[in-house]
Length: 280
Image (cartoon, rainbow, N blue to C red; front, side, top):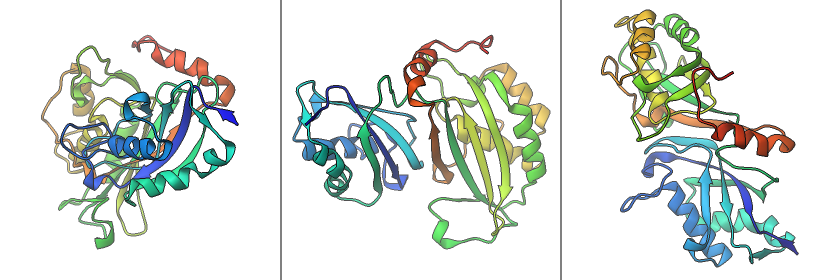
């Protein structure tokens, strides 16, 4: 018998259209609530006896191909090796929906924290602009733009914005929360159908940051503002309305990057240290 006294790592994905985000909402369906209810059923535990922590909290309507969360179970809870192997299948069945897919369940390595052990998060955003061939099968995952967007200018913006900065101008404020993040990658390509796909990677994102970044890129791609205009707004460190926050449905969390298992605990400690603009 394998004694589970701390945590499980669970990898999953979801189509976010029907959910009001990851986090539990008082009167609306959420991904977290659905998974916690299913865990309670399968493990025969009161939901109050365990806790889940996610790598990246997604907003209402945002999708995920590779979300990660951990669950802390009661110290006296026992799970056989066979039960652990069966848990993904049983959890999927208890969910009662294919809008959430359970990919993998395993005992978490020592020091693992789904949120704080992560090195980075990577998102994609899809825009079918005037130059793109519209695919009706992708309407839940792409935003249609009536304009022809200049991806070269949008990529110039992406390069100009990289690095460690205060992103308060791009984030919805949260009390006592830092808005300092390191943007590691922000680039655009067109796929075979001409759909614009942004790849956005950072150590972490504050609320609405990715969709605001994409909104600024769309404004630059339309020629409404310049790359320098966006950089100046960022330095003002105050939320503005010079570009829209893009719709949620075009956004998908595609990966969470972690260090080797031996470095998980130290990475969690490093991440918990409050970010400053003098950080390495």
